[in-house]
Image 1: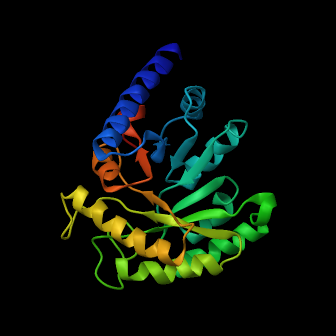
Image 2 (image 1 turned 120 degrees about the vertical axis):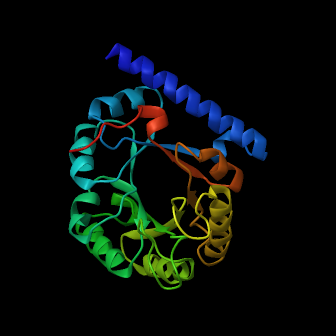
Length: 245
């Protein structure tokens, strides 16, 4: 365990240096960017070490992994982010631990999540509304969805309006994954610049929806340069993930 703690501390320090350097290069303050450590496939023991090292935001992309891990770590001062594609049959579980969901991409999901949030007592001062980020698919045609989930840019405003009307939820901002196909394939900086344009439009309608979740281990510098407020880093902190199955 000591070896693992040392390894995570060193990795975390390297990522911190990267974020700090990217902020300096962009003329931004370090505190403008929040690091979310994506802990998928890694055990609760790693989450506990990360918490001891000062990490306050962790993310998962599969409820079947996230739910027991969050329960095991419920004593820690952590905010849990759900970043994977979310099926409506998982929302009742997700609302029990997630502070934010980054992958909202259809009205049906908003409705299901709202219903589950209300039943779980999320909303108002007591349970805290669930922050919802619209996932933007920069590889999607007008009115379509992306290969990795997400709504086309022209669908963002209407979906954010649905979130704003939904009990137990609040529009928190936007999320994207640098696309593998389409006009932005291989161009993460251009993709993140486009996301920031969409984010500016969103804030005009929903001023509090100011989160921009973009950038991962390979492209976090591009995201910081573009103006992202949150970066989602997994392998650079935890190491290369073991193959599943």
